[in-house]
Image 1 (cartoon, rainbow, N blue to C red):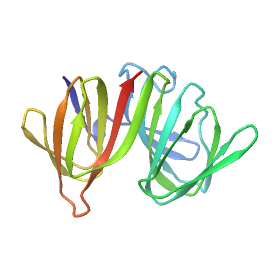
Image 2 (image 1 turned 45 degrees about the horizontal axis):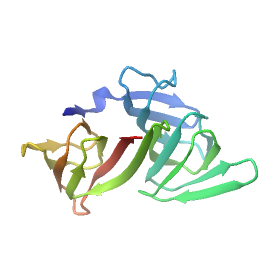
Image 3 (image 1 turned 60 degrees about the vertical axis):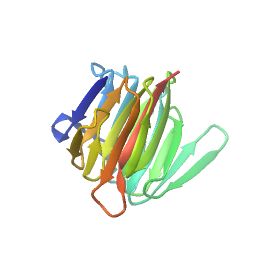
Length: 192
């Protein structure tokens, strides 16, 4: 089992044309976003301007989930424009090669990945999460919770922490500290 807990001191913060981005995790860990040599990257961005143009990433697919406020994405294809409106915890998957504009200020959760992976991104609520050994997982905590790990050891995880796990199967149990039961966001990476 490969297991790692990440905190604010592990994240990389940088500026982009529309605001600020916080890189939570990049894989392989020796890769770099600027070099575009990563398999997948997980981040959160603040879109601080009313209209912005997303960075072109021709060799990557993306999943974007809104965390705060609402945003409208406009994907400019050769013969049409596709408009996607997202409210908090709604997501969309799209090609990084497509010219994409956003309208509206928001905070988002963003996953970029190569075609070597099938990726799913979901909000996790209190309860069990089933893990498969062939997948890699990234949990980002929006709220404090208690997590019963696979070895039945309980760990308190704080909001803003992340949890990276691979080569493990079984169940993890999450107990929420908020009434709405929202724990955070789960990303599952399955190599094709």
